[in-house]
Image 1 (cartoon, rainbow, N blue to C red):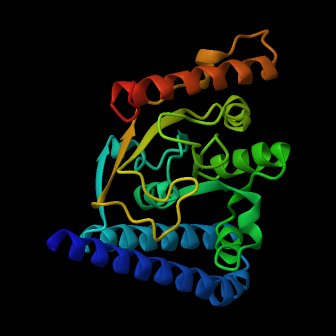
Image 2 (tube, rainbow, N blue to C red):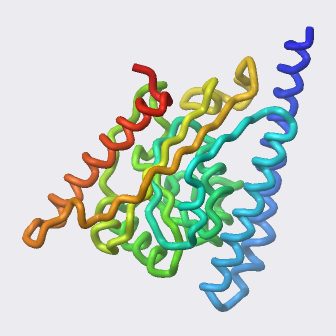
Length: 262
């Protein structure tokens, strides 16, 4: 009986969290974005919006933990809070990965799917925050480089969408590697895990797991882009080399940390 009550409570709390998130996103798009667009100074506007998003997601994560829906363990978070520009490269097992990383990173910019630019709950947020669309690979790299130059940490999920299944990832795209080579920004590999699985590919919000899901985030040591380059190496070859190495590096650590099961 207690287990059943716990399940229905988490189902209710999850639903209310999604409603609150959707309403806040819609309010931001309809109210805050038009107001923010009136501010003539792009740099200070983006800083304010990035801080607002960071505080909002910190509050949402806190609520999910307090009501018993979610547990969260983080290792190496100091690297995300260092306020030095870097490129966060993470695997993407669940829809909540973006929320968690934004809650941990005070000065962040995201690469987001192009479909979100037409979503009624997201379109104002992604524009006001100057997030980067993945629609055009060339513009993605150039826009990301501009954000890094402005002091923002870029959060990128090179799989492009959520992982297809437990213990598997989509092949990494090379956008982050071109960005790193062009800017010399360090790569911060990040491992994401959710046990039991929740909000994965194919799951709906109401597919609540039998117990509170446990999200784990491990930030690995930064990797310099110079490791993958040589004076006469074409940038395309260096990017291909970096992408393969980072994908293998993250995959190996997912097994080492027990996030992937052999």
